[in-house]
Every structure is written in structure tokens, then in C-alpha cells.
Length: 70
Image (cartoon, rainbow, N blue to C red):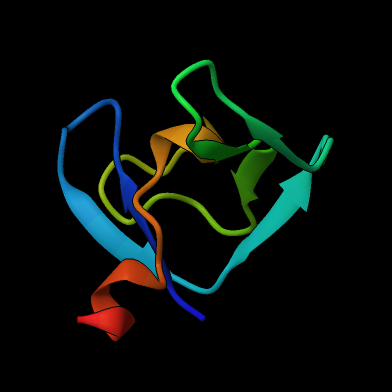
């Protein structure tokens, strides 16, 4: 499954399956009642725009299933 990422250096968006989940502490409920995945996602290959291996908070990434459900 492709995840959608945003390069923090160039602010360009890209999709890739080359990532790994790290520091996975599961799903938590926010104070507003939303479910939030408490984990980090690290690229396995360099960003296509700046060449850096970025790490992201999972909660900051768009849900890859949201586009499939519409």
C-alpha cells in the first residue's frame, strides 16, 4: 500500500511503498474522540526530491484508506 508523504525540505508530495513503521505504540483516542496512530514512519529509500531519509509522525500523514473509501 502506498503512503503519501510530503518532503519537509521542498514541500513536494510523493507516494511510496518503501517505508517502515517504527516506535509503534498502537492506536490511542484523542481528547476529541478521534483515533490516532501513535507511531513513526521512516522512508526506506531517499526522498525523490531532496535525497534525505525522512521520518514522520504517523498522525501527521493522510490516511491511505480514506481515498479508497470514497
